[in-house]
Length: 425
Image: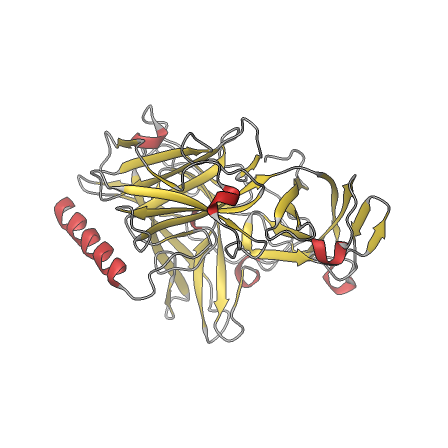
C-alpha cells in the first residue's frame, strides 16, 4: 500500500509540473500535494509572525515535509516585493548582499512513523542568502534548480525600523456593528520628515495573520507634527468572528481534546474529531485559543520534527448549507486560510452535514469553518462561526515608506497587538 501511495504521489507531482500556468505566485502556497506542514516564523519564538529586524541577529526558520520521502534536489531564492506583493522593479543586486539562490542541504528522514517523510529546514539570513534592505519578501522553493518547477512560495518580512506605532483595539464606531466588529486605531510616530504622507506612506492591517483580512490605509485621518493618525470612523473595521475551534493530537495513545477516536494500522493513522455545530446563535463563550495557529508536537516520541505522525483527520460539521451556490472549507493557519481541494468539505444534503478528511501532522491545531459564496466571491466564517466583538484576536500593523525617487517600498514599522490578557507574538 505504501508503494502504491508513493507511485500515486509521484504521478500527481509530474502532472502538476506538466500543467500549463504552473508558475510561482507571491502568496503563501504549496504547489505539490506531497509537500506538507510548511512552517515559517521568527526563530526567537515558534510560530511567531515571520518578521525579522534588518542587520540584526534575528533569523527566520523555514521548514517543510516531503511525503515522497527519499531526497529531492530542492533549491530556493528570495524576491523583494512591494506593498501589494508584486515584484519590486529593482535588480536582485539591490536587495541581496549575497548569492541569488542556494540548494537546501539540511534534511532529515522520519523515524518510528507509519508514513515515511523527509523533513527539510533552512534559516534566513544565512551565508548564502542575505537580504540587505527592508520590505516584503517571498521565499521560493523549486525543484532541480528550475524555477519553472515551483514547490513552495512563502511570505516573510524584513523590518528596517524607523517609526513607532501606537495602536488600540476598540468597538466599531458603526452602531449596527458594535456587537460584531472590532476597530483598530493607530498612530505612526516618526522623527524624520515625510514630505507627502498621502503618497509616501502605506499602512496594512491584518487580523490573526490572515491575508484574507488585509485592509490597506493610504490616507491618515490627521497629519500632525511627527505624527500620522489613523482613526477614521469608517476604516479598519474587522468582524470579531469567534474563538477558534481546536483539537489535540500530541499523543496518539489516548483521546485528548475534541478527539472522538484514533484508529491506526500498519499503513495509516486516522483521527475522528467530535462533530461540530454552528455557533451563530446564543451568547458568546470565551475560551483559550491560539488565534488560528498550530504547533507540531509528539509526546510519544523525542523529536517533534521527524517522529510526529501524519494523520488523516475527519472533520464533521452538522449544519445546513448557508446558500445555494457555494462551498464550505475547514481553515486555519495550517493551510494559510486558503481554499483547496484538500480542505474542501463534502455536503450530505440528507443528513445536513459537511465532512472532509485532511492530512495533518501530529500536534495542536486551531481551526474554523468558512463558506465561500460563489456569487459574491467572498469567503466568510460568519455563516458557521458567528461574529462577536468580545472575541480575542491578534492584529498586525505594517507601515511601508517609499522615499521620494525610490523604486521600492521599505517596511519601516511593525507592531503586533492583541486584546488577550497577554500577547503571544
